[in-house]
Image (cartoon, chains in turn blue, yellow):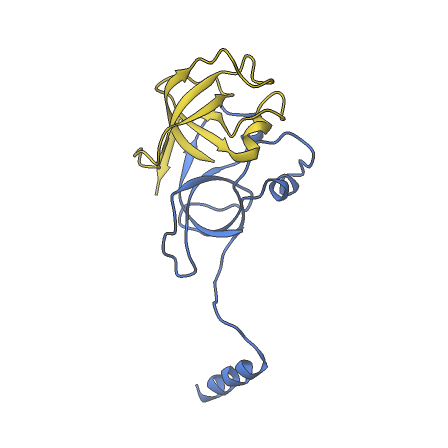
Length: 108
Length: 88
């Protein structure tokens, strides 16, 4: 999966049945700091996401069909929003570092 | 999936088996602001689109899943007509 930021929506009335009843979101891929890492793309929403949200995007066909309960069915959807991100933390927490963090917490 | 504009049609008499009757269109991928994103591609139409239409497409293996037979050599399919793009 990748991180993305929802920047808009697409309105369409005439579309393949697989896209009926779901929001089609415009997503820009971002890195852990929120910087753009590529070109915008469209993703089908399963997580009640909307413009401004940082989201998790799944772009693997079999996983996507599993999300929609469409295993073994012709379901032409690729990028899918599968989560809304609350927070991203980067860093390794091993036992020693947890100790260091505990010391820092105590010092506050 | 990605946004695109249909910029033309392709006529091919000799095609791979399974592509007989497929409508091939030339699409120009777009960003949400309507600016070109990379070069044009050939896509199979599954949304009754025509030149000038603003469409959205699915690429890679999933493109074939929009076709009547999902085992055809296709890597882009038009799956919807765009009415409006709402940018934040």
